[in-house]
Length: 107
Length: 107
DNA sequence: TTGACATGCAACCATTTGGTTGCATATTAA
DNA sequence: TTAATATGCAACCAAATGGTTGCATGTCAA
Image (cartoon, rainbow over all chains, first blue to last red; front, side, top):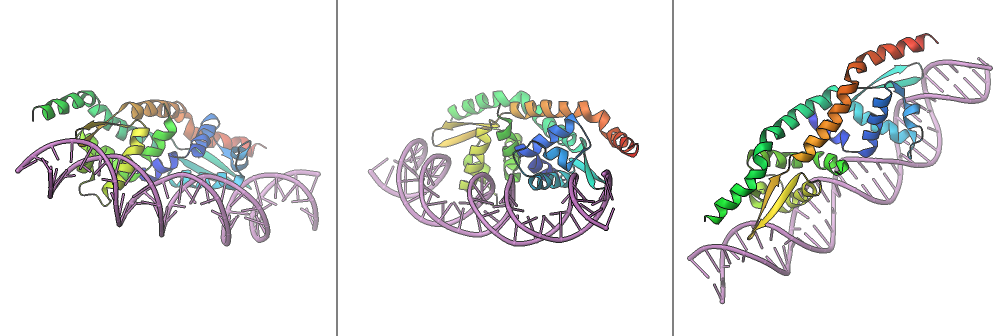
């Protein structure tokens, strides 16, 4: 999995909004996803391309419409890898400051 | 919590690398964090500023050095909110495609 | 007290990003 | 078959981003 693409795709507020919309109702068309937003359909298209490249969204051409579906897998993978990492270091994090201060003052 | 700042801070590979370095050893100075990287100390400074603004890193001036500490809280918060969201929709995600296809073919 | 070291600040630069407009193409429905 | 609808493609633009260099300031140690 390309976690760089995932992180970068999630970095933009508009793209997170699109993800939220899809989460509320999966399988929406490009036009539906563009409705009521403060940007053009073409801008939405670009965002969706990035989300697809990050594998966060899968799309399917159905006649003249393009349907979009969320793929929750990469988010979960990232979460597990990153949260796991930080949980492991979490206990120590606060006391680290104290420890460092003590070792410095001993010099 | 400003989750936009957190997402944007994590979007950059160099900043994730700095987080990794801090995870391996917490409380490092700017100079230490800059060692052996393909960018200048000044670039690292800028990255650390963003990480601090996102509350992912806290710093502490100790004499002429600046020590940096990871704050695992925002990452966990984001994880819980986002993963929670997606876990809830996870079960339905795959079947949504089938459902949509069926409803379309019925038209 | 002076030189070395750690960091801060500001100006500048190239590239990426997020957006637009205009037009082309494909599909559906009347 | 033709008009409306849905999407695709390309050129263009402003602003943000990630980086640099040069110099200033603050602190420690000999």
